[in-house]
Length: 433
Image (cartoon, rainbow, N blue to C red; front, side):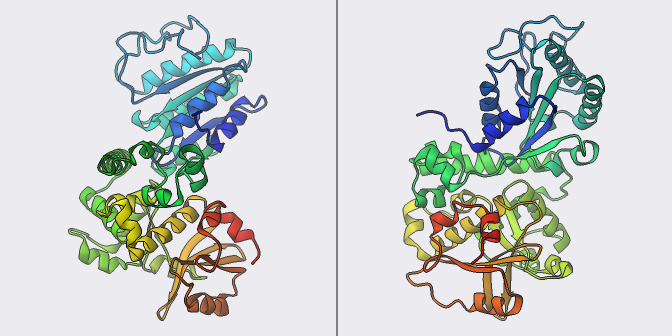
């Protein structure tokens, strides 16, 4: 079966092949969503274009020989370079001095390649104070006209990549990579809707679906633990790391439900205050793990003060910790309904366009599962998984109060789930209905 190419690949190729603009691109997104594969596939597509390139994994074990070998497949042509830039002096610690040496090699190659060169630095956050060094090197290249394009990559969100938001503003092009959609998982792995809902959108997990114990271990150790320890705890101050992990566990258990911060404090040991929980929830959301959706209101301060609706951003996080097998989950209509609702929430959050907001609404026992808002446009969404759609009192009350642009049901009696998950949030926000 040919390797699957996400749409990101062609976009990255187009950006890197531009003649008039040299880009500093920041590829970020949740762990295990295929960022490295996207970069490698894009580089392979550039192989016959006359653009030299080099991919460097910052977190790879140092070689015993020269760090960069000029004869590597798809590397830039052999070159001597200025003194000390053949890699032989950069075998040890991956620090800013090492980064400067790598960059100087890339410059040398770019000046001698017909169409310049591309340097990809994966897991860039492993280099202390990397952003200050990159800023200086990039500004030098712009001043001299060096035909070098640079891609930096990391599993942490932009705000956690130390210094990126402050020191490189205006210099980099954000290139977000999010969780795999239903359509992508179907094309790549020929999975069913039910498999996608239960096992989620982690491509590396697909080969483990036949062994659910192995799959659960992969989600727990390869996704959750590495996300928390490497992509959050190592990059930002967290005074209570055990609380952060416990909050993720609680959110996975209660995904699709509204839970007040006070109730969370009561269920979490050493929870501290609600401000700490709100901050930790924001960190988990940025890492692509768990979101806390606010209650819809036209007033910002009321949204911030509301109880959050917890929603995993990949349903695998919910099901792997549930104790349910695939067949048991399908047989439990209540639990399966929560999976479906969480999948809808995750899809909306993961495809949300800049400037749009995702929330829920509740008043006197009436509720709307999700509310999309952007400027004057408002879409109210109710998810139904029963045999019949039942009452839609929440949608009706919301409609009378706020006059949304569109009110819709997803699932029973409304838009089919597979159809809804095939279009981004912006489609359902802009579409009249």
